[in-house]
Length: 463
Image 1 (cartoon, rainbow, N blue to C red):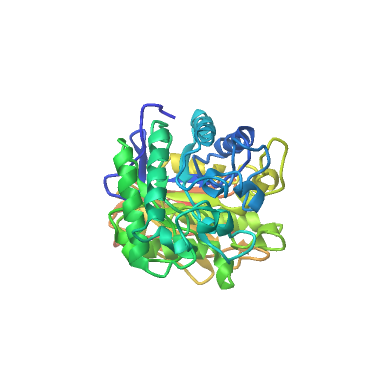
Image 2 (image 1 turned 90 degrees about the horizontal axis):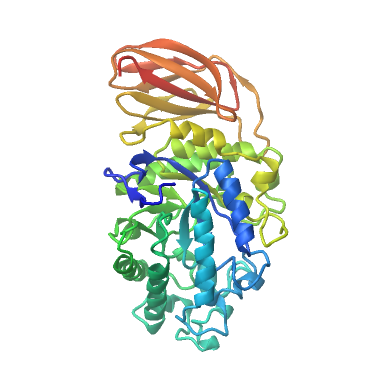
C-alpha cells in the first residue's frame, strides 16, 4: 500500500480510486479480541487478495481482554461504548490506542480499514437475544446516561450530542491512518428500537457526517447502512452519504440465491449516482448453526456472490459475515474464519482477475441468455468482462452438472473483430480462446461446455 495516498471516490462516482487506479475491491468482516487475533485475519485476507476489512469497533476489544470478540454480551461489555459503568460520550484513551494498533496492523499488510462506530444491537432492547444490548449501553438512563429510549439517539437530544461529539473525537484520533477507506457512522440504522421516523434518522446521519468532515481534513467518504436490502431513498440521496451500502442475506426471505440478490439490488441502487458497497452479506442472517453457511458446497454460493458483485457495478464485494470471522474461538483472541479453514483463498481468483481490469469506464452491459444460464457483464469501448452461472447451481446442493450448447448475446457499439477468453472462476484456468466478429453491434458468444460457472473476457481488436 502506498503510505502517502488516501483512497478517494472516482470522478464518475462509482468506485474507489487507489494509487491512481479505479478499482473493484474485495474484503471481509473480521472480529477478534486481541491485536494478534486481528493480525491473523489481516494476513489471511491479504493472502486471499482481500483488501478491505469492515470492523465493528465495539464488538471486539483488543485492549481489555484476550477473549474472542463477537456479538455476545461478554465481549460487548468491554467496549467503552457498551460499558454500563462508563459515562456516555466519554473517550477511553487506552481503548482508542489499542484500536490504532489494529488499524496500523492492517495498514502494514496492505489492507484498508472501515471502522463502524456503532451497531443496531447497542440501541435495541428486544430483538434477537442476546444480540440486543441496550441494557449495557452507557447512554441508557438506567446506567446514568441521557436517554430513556434508544431512538433518542436520532432526535435533537443530549444523547445525540454526546454520541456525535464522541464520534468526532475518535475521527480526530484515527484520521492520520492512511488506510482508512471510509468512515461508517452506524450499522443497520433501521433495527434501532423506535427507528420509525426516517427523516429523524437521516438528520442524525447528517449531523454525524458533518462532524466527521469537520474532523477529517482528508475528506474520506462517509457511509452508513440499513439491514438486508432495505432502501430508504431519503438516506441514500442525502449529501451526508458518499457511499451507499447494502447487506444482502437472501435467507431472510426464504431464498438463498445470494448472486441473484446482489445483482438485483446493485441495479436498483445504481440510480443514486454513488458507489454501492456490500458492507456485509451471507446466505442467511441467522447464526450459522444448521444454516446454509454450514453446507458442504456453500462456498460455491459465496464465489457466485463475489463475481456477481464485480460484474454488476458494485465497488466492494465479498464482506461475508459468518464465514469470515465468526467461527470457533482460537488461541490469542481470534475467531477462526470458516472460509480460511475450509476454503482458503476463496476470493483470490476474482481478486487476481480484477487487478487486470481498468474499471474507470466500465458500465453495466445487457446480456441475453436462455433460462438455463444467468449472466452479468460490464464493459467499455475496449473490454467486456462477464460472469455466467448455471441456473441449476443453487442452494442447498449447488449441483455441478455439465452445461453445453448455450449462447450469450451482448449488445455493444463495437465493430469488427474481437478476441474472447473463457476462464474457470474457481481457479482462473483458461478453458478456451478464440476470435469472433461483431455483427450489427451484437456479440454472439457460443459458450464452451462448463460446470457451475464461467468467466469471460473480450478484447476489441485494435483497441
